[in-house]
Image (cartoon, rainbow over all chains, first blue to last red; front, side, top):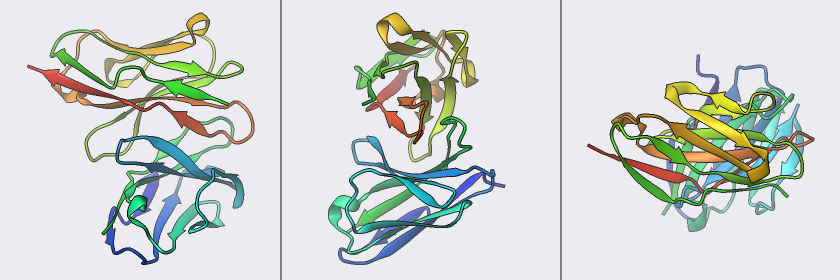
Length: 112
Length: 114
């Protein structure tokens, strides 16, 4: 079983569309994250949820809305996609007693 | 605010040669420190981490790193690289308190030549 799984792995869509990326972890971790890796490979945190509660929101445009229906799932919905949203999005989780992360394999989003 | 600097954007080494990748961090207390590796088109794999205790940390794939508080450094080393080590390497610092976010360096791309 994959510890942190993201779907889809690849996503190609047109500008202006709305899309979602799903993330699930089966590690029993309390905290989940979304990171964005841009074209220069720079990784930056976007959001963090602890037990379904938002605890980090790093100046991300309002078009990005995370949703955590339970502590094992953290989805990312993006409205009105722009070319600059093209990136690899990584989901991660940690147990909440220190940043021991487990990362998903990433979702490569391409906006055309 | 925490930050990480990886001064080398790209390093090329010969197969079998030794390797050292540099990492400097900025953090107000004793940090959590990590090295991750990312192969082309792949996710992030944890090589090793430092939380406390022995400042020389052993990781997977024959890698080690040494935490030097006086130099605010956490350099990654390997005595003999293999062609399969070619990848992007990221150093990261994590907070002890509260939000536990990781702050990554900009990465070092490692190329191995035969």
